[in-house]
Amino acid sequence: MLLQGLGVHSLTLLTNQQMNNQKVPIPMSNWSMYGLQVLSNQPIRGLSQSNSASAPDLYVNLGFLPEWFNKTLDQEARPWYASAHQGDGGVPNLRIWRLAGGHFYWLRYADGTHYVVNNIGTRIWSCWPESISPEDAISCLLGPVMGFVLLLRGIICLHASSIAVAGRAIAIAGPSQAGKSTIAAAFAKLGYPVLSEDVVTLDELNGRFLVHPGYARIRLWPDSAEALYGSADVLPRLAPTWDKRYVDLTEDSYQFQKSPLPLAAAYILEERALDCAAFRIESLSTREALLSLIGNTYATNLMDRKMRGREFEILRRVIADVPIRRVFPPNDYESLPQLCNMIVEDFENLTESVSPAPTEQPKK
Image 1 (tube, helix red, strand yellow):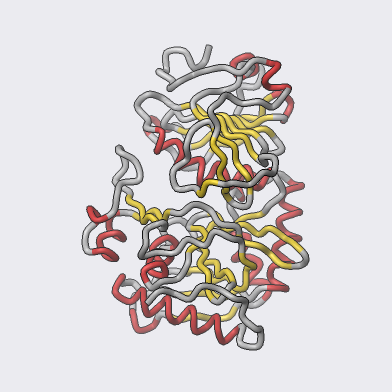
Image 2 (cartoon, rainbow, N blue to C red):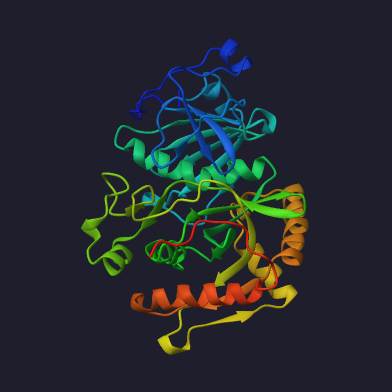
């Protein structure tokens, strides 16, 4: 069997009856994530616990895969998707197989972490080698895996951070390492509530697009942590084997926005301005705005034709409802507070004709 000899952590199997009844092992914990009620067999750090009496939207099973998993692999050996980026030995960082006639997806990362997701985005299983910490595996769950799950559930997401200003959500989008999380941390230091730092939902409701809270952490690389806080060691490590750190938004000096807010503007990060005095914000044409949003859609490489068509229609409605702006950020960390204030001022100018919804004010 494929997983034998890999030292897979806590490999336990569900019975067919459990699968059919959609049951999961106990004890279970209730969480809230991206607008979903989540039932998990292990604690998921960074998530808000939920007291909702409603039925779970998503079952998360950490530490094991379903019992039928190995029985399907020999029949469908060719990956449905393989990432262009490669890890050690030329192995793609992520490969995805469609199993059981497309009813399930198997996501395999180069480090040996496995996820199995059903095609309606209601169940996740995961296991990982003993060399990988649970924090490592859960970090992928909160970002790219959930981005894919939300896509399967029909919710388009942006690869972006989101903050709350005057009771509305602002998205800060851009490619990897563009500075989305760093800017979110700069906003947090200024006292603004943070909704999400990686996945921004575009959940359409009554003609508006809701951004749901993600998890109460902002993940930062050491250079960003050092620039913002004086030393990377001030912040805890995201996982024992990672050098990446995180800001805990549940601490008293920060605010985590626990309720969804309507998206009111999106700012797309461009290349950093070499001349710090030149950083600026510009408007985008409708075509430029659409192309920018398409380029910053989460899990965009995993969309089939039907998903792509839905994405296009939703983004067209987003552009009709929400201003999309282009940001040329500064090349130095010292100017980030000034950039944050510039974004807020620009946003207030865009929305000055709209009465603000009640919200907590930034802490001074």
